[in-house]
Length: 326
Image 1 (tube, rainbow, N blue to C red):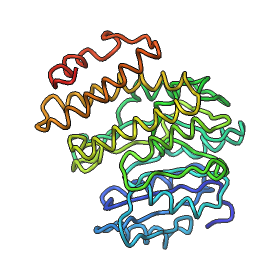
Image 2: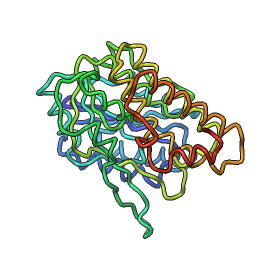
Image 3: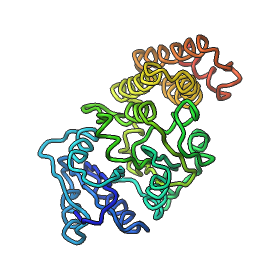
Image 4: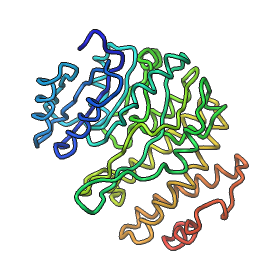
């Protein structure tokens, strides 16, 4: 590791050879050159490990951890976290892309504010139909979480930040992870959602910037986990992660953030899952989505959230009814 490094970027990957080159190139293009990266090959069966090793041989800012057995994103990130020696730490999934100024912008803000972490905006990187990928627009909930720029805030002062639930949109102080005992859940999907809520709940102060810092790839071959929410096991991990993240906010005495998160889930996540449930062949899938939706609506009522049928997307209630969830 370079003695000049300010930030360690943790890059886990499993069978991501078609896309990892773009992720590593996005690190090389950073306007902040003082970084090091831990590339975690999570027992890949394709050329991911060889690609990581070649990167490390060519640039000593890269180093490689190789797992003999697949442990998942949570285990890969935790293994790399144990090796971090820089003042700051960030994450980049090996099929995603950092924007060139991302590290400079976020490390610079933390240098000025002294906050525990900073979160930026992100967009989807979707297949363009011509063999490539094109970035989309910043989604409304992402904009609400990160715009306008805020410095030195708490989650009660900026509760809409709770919608920023991904690991790779943030740079943190390494000491914050150490002092807070933060680690990712292992052996499950959507592992970054509860960690994000713990970060917001435990931070003394955090910052948000409206800059798009990362492009989140939707793989053209359909192998991204978020492209398989029709699977019952994936759904259950998704619902568990959202519910656990909400419980973190409720259990750490952040009522405004918990209220904001209930509204976000009802507006953003329930309609998406209801669309899948409406034509799903398994009753267990519909029952799980329905129970989750009803629980959220009850929480909204108890919290006196200003929600009504009109506050949901226009097709939400018809979808819930069609799926026999409402």
